Image (cartoon, rainbow, N blue to C red):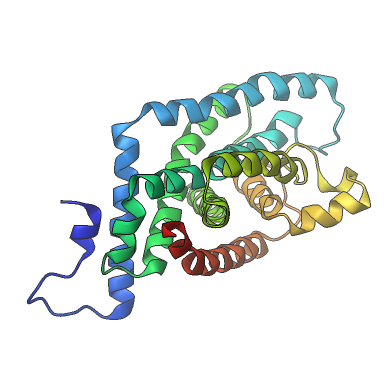
Amino acid sequence: MTSLERAAPRAGWAELPAPLQFILDTLTITEGELRKVRHDPFELLTRVIQPILWLLIFGQVLARARAIPTGNVPYLDFLAPGILAQSALFSAIFFGISVIWERDLGIIHSYLVAPVARASLVTGKALAAGLRALTQAAVIYIVAALLGVDLRLDPLSILGMILVVVIGSALFATFSLNIACVVRTRERFMGIGQVLTMPLFFASSAVYPVSIMPDWLKAIAALNPLTYMVDALRELMVVGATGTNQIGLDLVVMSGVLVGLLALATRLYPRLAQ
């Protein structure tokens, strides 16, 4: 039985209230997306190699060079949250390629004719992308601890980190989904994805503080959702680190952007079948 068949209301059953049906459908789509990872665990392994290399090589070299001012926080401690955000970004930004594959295989057409709201389809996929990023977060925490990063390990900080990672990954996965709905070909999508990843990463506070950026880059960083993700993660992950903004503001900005992207994806998703 497919995830869509499980989500479909059965004959003779009372119809659920719309909000409850939306949640049920969303969780069913999420489960179906997560099943793909269970059948291909090697994908998760390949996702964690790059952030580990960043911490082991890039972080260690710049920490010794003392070239970037990070206040009372050692550079490796400053960098670790940025690498976690980078890992989530780089994985999520290519989420749309799997959606294009689904279109080519005819799966999108099955989704669109199923008795499931379009909003549930895109929200379920976004939530699955967010949950998949938690594996990377766990690996980065372990590597950072082994390298001597002074991590916050109290339950509230861990729960806050999980929330930020899920929202941030879902945000960039939905952004990727919108791009896929517009370009609709793998070649164009890969080109756009490669063009966007580095500007998003370097126009944030992931590897250096916003305070040392030129004014024009500060303005771009203020519009970059990754900046708010890194800011929240840094305060939640590292002992003694403080964010530029309040964590509440970071979450509000990220959640607002995510809701807007989900609304746009709900409208664009049927274009994939054209």
